[in-house]
Length: 107
Length: 113
Image (cartoon, rainbow over all chains, first blue to last red; front, side):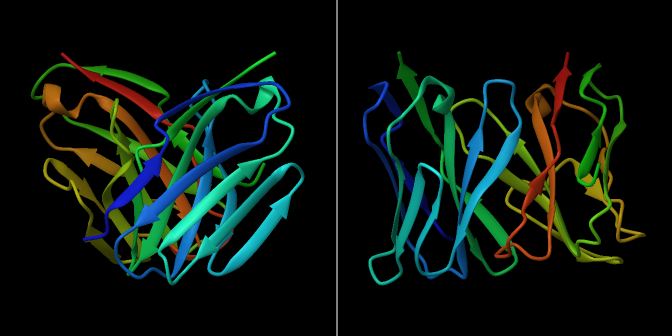
């Protein structure tokens, strides 16, 4: 069974700050997803990673396969970034999810 | 609009009642899955399907049934609702669990009284 740990569980930041959310997993995977869930409840896929680094706007995601670790970075954070960020790992035919990081960005 | 359509958005059931949550996608995705989301816990996989006619159990399958007669549809049936099944349910589809374009439905908030 793959265990997925996210940290921190809760994060409050001031607008403009650089934010890092971490995800660790215990078993080899085929891919890792970063998802965003807004207060309204909808879930959106941000990134899918199998190696290296991806960037989309102010969001950057990295993965280190050897260390079984991934990070999601938000540069120049904004109140609209406030959401729950979820890490999910794909192994076999299944996705296993972390518990999520609740991010609040204050103006 | 292309995507995953999940119905209903809200439902209240009495203990022992049965119901079906509907999920349909129009992206020709082979992989479809159902999750439940409970406070303080991550999304947990209930059942999944890798194509029409093929389904398998996830982490928390007890009390739920699925079928996949077409590529587009993947309904989730609650056989005899229990208060422990009060949760938010999400359907999702993609070309595979490790593939790009993982798309979630908008969720169903189910309360069992």
